Length: 442
Image 1 (cartoon, helix red, strand yellow):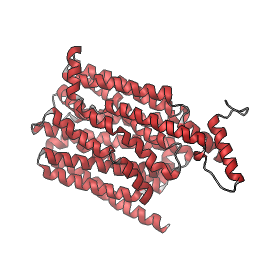
Image 2 (spheres, rainbow, N blue to C red):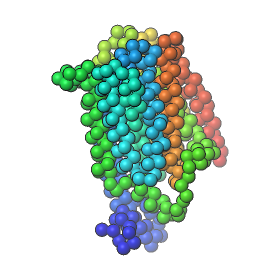
Image 3 (tube, helix red, strand yellow):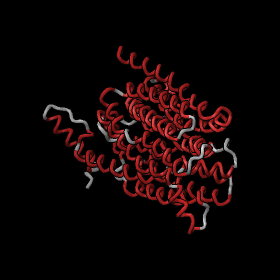
Image 4 (cartoon, rainbow, N blue to C red):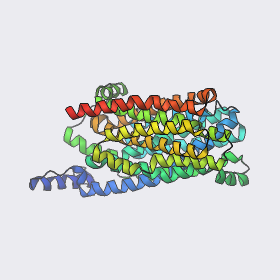
């Protein structure tokens, strides 16, 4: 029951715990209040389940979605259209979802993201049936909202976390997408089985499965994510700093870009996503041209996704222990190793799998510590908007990479396309070294 002042049980417990700590001469962060701890545990559990369901649905896009685009457009150069449209969709909804979260909480924002992706799955089923390029593009744009929801879920996990544990907490939710994201690219064959009795084309079946998973993820967020972690955190932070005026997107951009560490975090997350998307987009086409079956393509993408998510708890732990910037340095070296492996692969399936695993691990070592740096380096009142802005920026640049990856692949092959990752990783490695030295001196 709420108290006469209108405070909820979480807030009352937090104040009581803080008062007890003050009486004993110690300071207890509000995140350690029993009700906040219980809310955080429940929040993380719900986010984990929703991530598994949502990423399982979204996992069809890297393999089946690219092949559907090639089939609908009848052009390998346009096969990147699927990834481009989905990444652009994630970019378009990133800031709106973040602004929605700031006003209505994570529950509403994440639910909307998953439901929009479900509408995208319906459109993609229609594209497979009608060979409609319009439905393909529209479906992938809407499908991208699921990517945005999945990315913003990592910040939801950190809303109520202690600062010293943000890396591990954030990375647990990233890791929870492993099961869904690894199995998702392999929905091609099960999807064909589902499509047969429904009278649908084989590639449409994967998106029927995705539709069910995405609706389930959205319902979990809307119905069960209570109390809302962001609104709860905002109430406590407002109590310490006082109410603040809402800032426009332009003001958030200026503040973020003016903070050197936040600017570095922005560039790292953009670079990680750009390098990953540019190579992963054309991998199914590259393997298909070398005679790989749909099953082998799915396994390869699954190995890549395993690199993205499976080791994220270790990456989060390392970020908390040795600092996120050093983990970012390691990530850029891994990107370079992935590129070298891709160049020497010559289309061999085993070497391609190794390259794609390293590509995913490099992404993890950029995205997880970059997200931690961002959350720590921006003021609390613009944190949700900054998070959405970064997600939008990285998806916008990744959409550009996906768009040009098809023509580059057609012109210079997969090895030439791989050089793009080096052109991103080397400058970021130098920037990370310079940032580490600057912070050490200061």
